[in-house]
Image 1: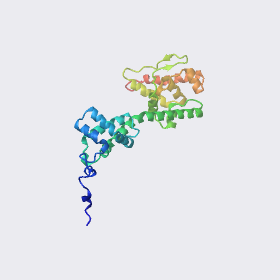
Image 2 (image 1 turned 60 degrees about the horizontal axis):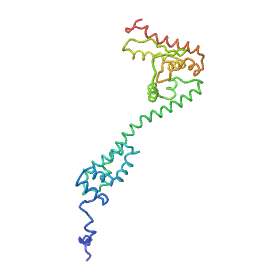
Image 3 (image 1 turned 90 degrees about the vertical axis):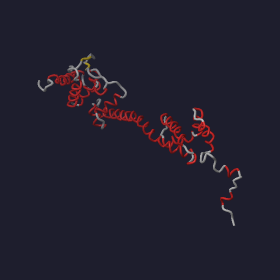
Image 4 (image 1 turned 180 degrees about the horizontal axis):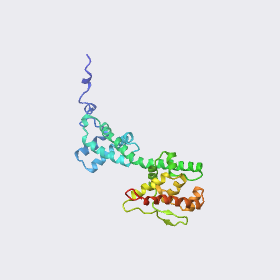
Length: 266
């Protein structure tokens, strides 16, 4: 009668006694480093164990960590060191345990990508804005106003302002005359700058597109570069006299704010 298969394992044979070591399912490649660290947890033994399991960490970064930038790599090491403390060789392999614990890299990578994606979205919107401005310039024979850009791109005026502010300063408050001298629109009362800004926006919305463009480059609205009357004339295909007249009309509309007292009278 054949012996049971289990009885064929002679416990005196070397391979039989090593079939299951004291470290259970811990991989032989990690055994020495793990046991050394377990006996004396210090920076040296911890670093040696991290070096041994580095292929597993790299695999987890590739699977869970997206592009695996510095933030993800740093967090992967911290998570691996924490995983060493919770590892039980009798319950599974080190590789399986590490891969399970390092799944948290998905969250780390998502947060890291969100931080990166914000400027990337601004860059994409800026490219879209620039390309649209070029296209409208060809169609109109002049620089488009922000309202025309907003209508064509689908971006709000607030978004256009944010895109421009992301890489250049914003100039506001003064209009250049035809000789390049600066003069200020009438000042509002202290603490009422928001009222002045709101009034300027109301004036802006009611203007024709060419006058909007003049106002943008006269006041530096939404990060627009302040241009002289001559530069505006060249960009818009108008005479400097026409630019001057339009500026005067815009200024008159801006000044009308101060003909209305705070209580709604005149």
